[in-house]
Amino acid sequence: MTQTPQTPGPAPGTAARHPVAEAVAPGYAFEGPVLELGGLMVGPTELSDVRVRIPLAMVNRHGLVAGATGTGKTKTLQLLAEQLSAHGVPVFAADIKGDLSGLLQPGEGGEKVTARAASVGQQWTATGFPVELYALGGEGTGIPLRVTMSSFGPLLLSKVLGLNETQESSLGLVFHYADRAGLPLLDLADLRAVVAHLTSAEGKADLKGLGGLSSATAGVILRELIGLQDQGADAFFGEPEFESADLLRTTPDGRGVISLVELPDLQDRPAIFSTFLMWLLADLFHDLPEIGDADRPRLVFFFDEAHLLFDDASEAFLDQIAQTVRLIRSKGVGVFFVTQRPTDVPDEVLAQLGSRVQHQLRAHTPNDAKALKSTVDTYPRSAYDDLGEVITGLGIGEAVVTVMDERGAPTPVAWTRLRAPESLMGPADPAAMQRLVEASPGHATYGRAVDRESAREKLAARLEEGARRAEDDARAQEQAREAEVKRRPRPTRSKAPAKDDDGLVMDVVTSPVFKDFMRTAAREIARGMFRSGRR
Image 1 (cartoon, one colour):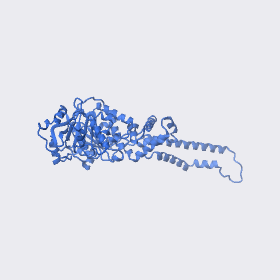
Image 2 (cartoon, helix red, strand yellow):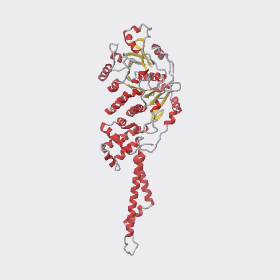
Image 3 (tube, rainbow, N blue to C red):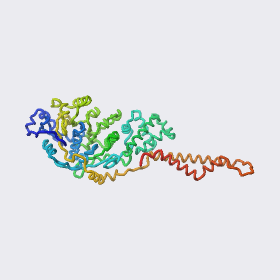
Image 4 (spheres, helix red, strand yellow):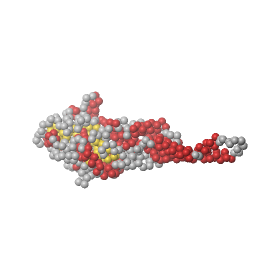
């Protein structure tokens, strides 16, 4: 972690008499287990002996880690994950840049790390932590994470596809039809097959029965699904579906397992990644029992690049997020949103975040200045004369902190020099990561995709059956014509009569070559329509 020039911290009893230290210290004097964040700063180069921390029992009241790029958000996330694991609390986090994989290896010391640790009273020891690596759809180094299309649902998928509210409602009707018709939606190809069926001649009656779904809207949805598949999203949907309960594991020595999901090429598919993480959170909410207020969280979920989740989201989608965040606390799950500015998070969600770790914000533009003012206005009482100036002047590895105390009240704002992570501050060795994945029991469970019969195969079989019946009907008609021709009296001719047109058609239709051709054509039509989903 880069360190700004600092003077050594004064002896206890000296800086503690500073007015800021006297005002802040009582707010962080907790009795129960805590996560240590760092030391209280009372000026740009002045560090007090007051320790800034978060009560472990309050971590499930959620939190926010915000700040401009390069100000230390990832290191803060790493610091929190380490201490949660040490307290026996499992952690889930998205590893956007790959840096968090270093959690599995001991850190590398040095003069800067030693100096920072000493300045905040930290006994720094190089330590590796128990880590499980995941990758969406197996893209990257990790155990593949997949979800069935039915579980993902129309609301989350609408966010991924960028549908408007009318189209979102129509997509819900498609899911309803598939469920009613007994057509399992397991992957992207299944949903494409159902929409293609509804827009085909064979599906006109079914489409009409859905009332609120027009053929034009169904066509828009189908085009968006094709575009999503072109981005490689079909790798995310399918079986075996990930069991979110697997995130709640601890090691035999009592440490919480840190589950990291790699997100490669985030800039190409931002909505897919963020919405997939929201599905995991919603799935946990659905499956976990209520535990009320516990002395420690059951799981802490770090939602990095959180702005991607809220960008262009519908009201229904935002309502679902707000409700999930509000209620999942009672399931023992804490959620930390990690983003650049607090204003990236909607007010109804931001109001539920009990802990705030604000790294430097920049105010180079009018929009930046507006965001800074909005940020300052959301903080509780502050002993600093100008909190906005403090936030814009923060060094790397410093943050303005306020948390929820053991009574549930906000603590005073604390300008904090953060502790140094004890694991590797950077990507882990690729060979070590690969060995970890291959040795994991989860790799045996989720490593290989399963392709069982679902909507695509059932619709293809239905089409092939229709073609077979049409062939049978045609053959029956020709046989009837043949019988009719045989009953007709034939005129006497001096030469052998040529076959009439009906007889010629009958011979062709009933020939083995023609039958084989018809069967092959029916199969190819069916497969050609639905081939593009799975490999």
